[in-house]
Length: 197
Image (cartoon, rainbow, N blue to C red; front, side):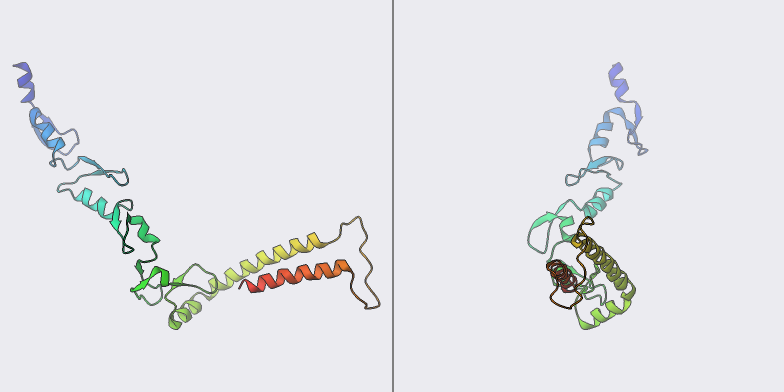
């Protein structure tokens, strides 16, 4: 009798949803789809999500969860995050808003910045004229890096200080083997620098 009386006591939902009921009905409220504060664990990412009044918390999370599997346009069932890198996904060109462009059909900026575009002459021209400052900065950094490489190579090619450098050839005759070697190394470095553009 005492136990039955306890089951008839009114209790509050432990999830703090403001629902009160007889203790005997509380488990139905908690285990069913009644408690809006009931936690749901996403099977894809493991995150705990509050159910919400009509399950909207779960629906909202599932719509955004990047780990849940979806059918991609490439034909595979993969996590939603795959669409960020999939080459078959249609994306907008940053310059003309053309949306029928597949990611794999975008073209990188020829000046070396990270922006992609559809590759029409209009977009390339717009991009180049609007990003001139960034392109010049990028090229200056690349040039400084190359200058550092050249200086390092020049230092490596210099003879050790303990040996005196051979005197210059005053007759204008053929260059020494060391001078020819330095000249060939510098030519290789400069041709590599200019061919990388």
